[in-house]
Image 1: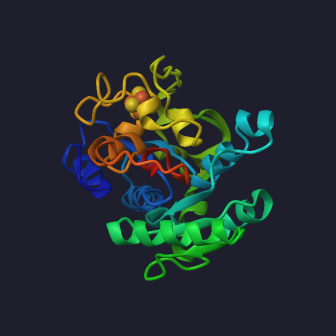
Image 2: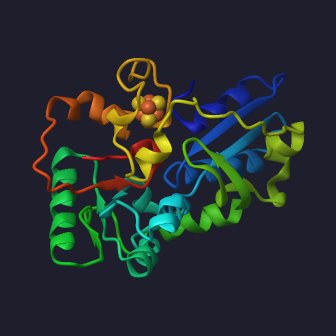
Length: 277
Ligand code: SF4
């Protein structure tokens, strides 16, 4: 495990006799540093460094949630709105969310990760829901703009291209939801260099992450929540990071089970960052 992608490059430089493969994961936030890394490796002429690219795209996850079977079956999704992730939005901006607000009539509020940010975003969502509105609002205006970080976007499009399909934990196979390295940088693409094949690994049969992400179920509806699946032993993606719906509910929500019948459900669009208050 390394702290920064740059550490992988340093390792390759320190050990020219070894092949160093950087396993690059994450949403739009972590993609620009990987692009930079590949360009640096190219500039340095490194022959023992490559990247296994598993970067994914947030708007594709939203589209998947909005086009889920529940929508087709019932004509609507039991979600009132979306909390857009701040870190991703610093890169892509708020513009990509506008389609979802306009087409699906679901409000979106971009929120920071501090408790006050999340509370403010939920308040903004509730005001929209009560007012019958479906807008994209930006709670995290101190770092997120409508257009995002153009320089980072340009860097990413120079190094990466869309992958036709990618398997997500909880959401399954999603078309055009991930990135791969362009052939101009093939020397640094571990998939090309080592003929790596993907093998799908099924989610745990009891895991309800997909339903939790779509707002159809709550974390406590999963029969292994808090028993087999805990933050110390995460079984599904929603329990992996502290911001995940199941991990957040395990840490806080299960102690404040209050229901007055006026249920508002929101979800964060990044699968490992879902919040279902
Ligand atoms: S993350 Fe764990 S508790 Fe949550 S739905 Fe998946 S298996 Fe169940």
